[in-house]
Image 1: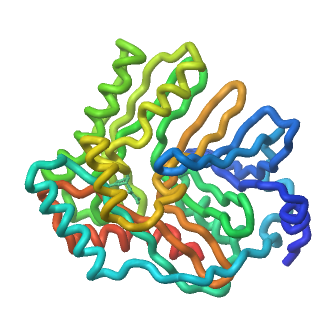
Image 2: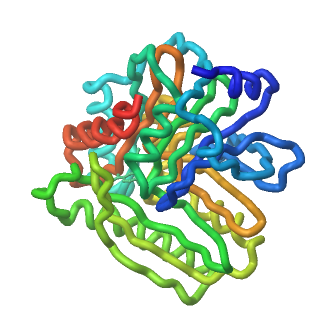
Amino acid sequence: MITSFFNNLINSGSAFACIKFPEEKNIYLIIQDQKGSNYYSFTSFDSSKKYVFPFSQFNKISDFEWEKLTFSLSTKKNTQTINESNYLRILDKTLYFLQEKNADKIVISREKWVDNSNINPIQSFLFLCKKYPNSFCHLSFWNSEEVWLGATPEILGSWSNSTFKTMALAGTLPDKDSFVWENKEMEEQKYVTDYIYNKLQYYSSSISVKGPETLHLGHVKHLITYFSIPLNAPQLLSKLIHSLHPTPAVCGLPLEVSRNFIINEEKYNRDFYAGYIGIETSSSKNYFVNLRCGKLYTNGALLFVGGGITAESNPLQEWKETELKAKFITECL
Ligand SMILES: C=C(O[C@@H]1C=C(C(=O)O)C=C[C@H]1O)C(=O)O
């Protein structure tokens, strides 16, 4: 293994990321460069933390011998995360809160630690790229304690050629043929669709909507509705992104009630999970919700998984759903 390439970057204090856009084959390496005019960023779920680095170009990964490359991670000391029975307790409490009609939907999540002393970040990233062609895949190195890996299917917003696109992605079932969508999932996804539609109305009177359709991802499938509006003024874009985040796909409805419930009950810091990742150039801007992700260490990975709860949810099913969502990352380690 060649460790010097990345370790030299790391020693020089540079951040970098390996990325693959949805529906694209090319894998790119982007490296922090203060002279660059493009930006790569992470915004936390609560929007209080933002990491960003400028970069000058997208380096095609096939130009290097990536298979042979690796870099060093740090060791995580406290690896304790919530167990099944305590998570079920939070879900019960959420269900009660929803049944009392305090909110329509709340997205509850947790951390999951996976022991693994053999992690090769680049190999895992390449695996994700092959397995999830429709997702945005990334390996994002901010510093040795914050190395994120993920394959997210969810676009918060993308802008190019005067068009803004987004999606309502919600409702989850195991990706097996025998499962059909029921009212519960349809309703859960419709909350997100209606919410996004209302937000877009401030920006355009011509909103095109397609869906809901089924998005198959292997372990799970989701309901997805696509939106597109004309948006000529790029300066409106950051306002629009701020107004969309967080959607009820990762927070809940009503927004503030859900946010407060999450802060009080989850009792861990979501950090960049369910926040968003930005890739901004002069001609296009893309923002992806940071899902199906985790942080990598020499001794394992800290994963983040969650799911939307409504008054009809079944806690055990919801626990199983988070286990399925964890497979996206555990399988590639
Ligand atoms: C919260 C997650 O996923 C979100 C929640 C979903 C749901 O509740 O059905 C589906 C897709 C995502 O919008 C996650 O993957 O951790």
